[in-house]
Image 1 (cartoon, rainbow, N blue to C red):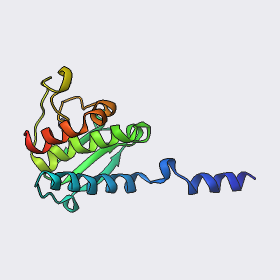
Image 2: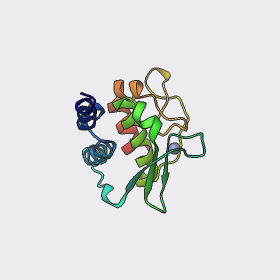
Image 3: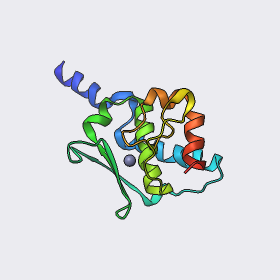
Image 4: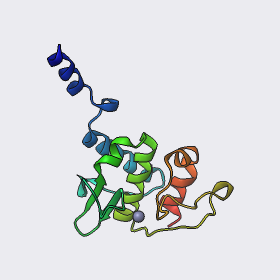
Length: 141
Ligand SMILES: [Zn+2]
């Protein structure tokens, strides 16, 4: 019986996708979203790496010279789908759109202006105002 349970757990990772499959899905989604704003971006040049820590303070980072995005494993596993997308799009904003941080609060109802906020944008806020944040990301920089 123990063997059967272990097999089932291995065959059914959370959400039915591995972390690598989920990040690849988000890379293609980012390309599609950029194309809707007439931007061509190529995510094939990037490598996504899962790490244990990034100096203990960050959950994601972009190393533009290495063309690498680093994601903290423990955060990624516990993050909602919207939190994951918000984080990936933030890092892709650095890596592919050459965006810096924007800590203003000129978004809808005084919300953060940009997904490029230094501390990241909460997934539920991002999801609710996704059209606004995508327009700002791809056209506002
Ligand atoms: Zn950043």
